[in-house]
Length: 139
Image 1: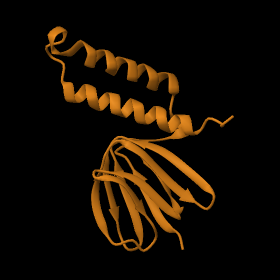
Image 2: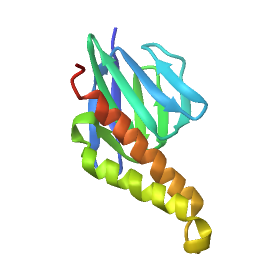
Image 3: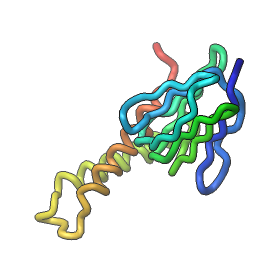
């Protein structure tokens, strides 16, 4: 018995369909949600969101947000959400390198650098790269 899932960002509805299972990056670790799960609300960390539907697995990169489990559906309000096939690998690698340079520069060379923002940028880039790598065929 599948459960209805809606994944929404401020800009659009990213996904709306029924699935067999949702695996989300909760604030205390990975969280698996099956149909008829106990209702809950939790924050999401930047990470990989996986939707399992039969033998198919849909992977997305989320940069945070909230997950709400209701008796009849799962609602994910994400800051950003990108399917693996939407991620531009070159852009994600450039973002990773830029964040690494900012962190390496530190406050000595960049007095206005916000360390937490640079670390968050690096985490987002790494998640996007991980999710994008899933779409590549394995040899």
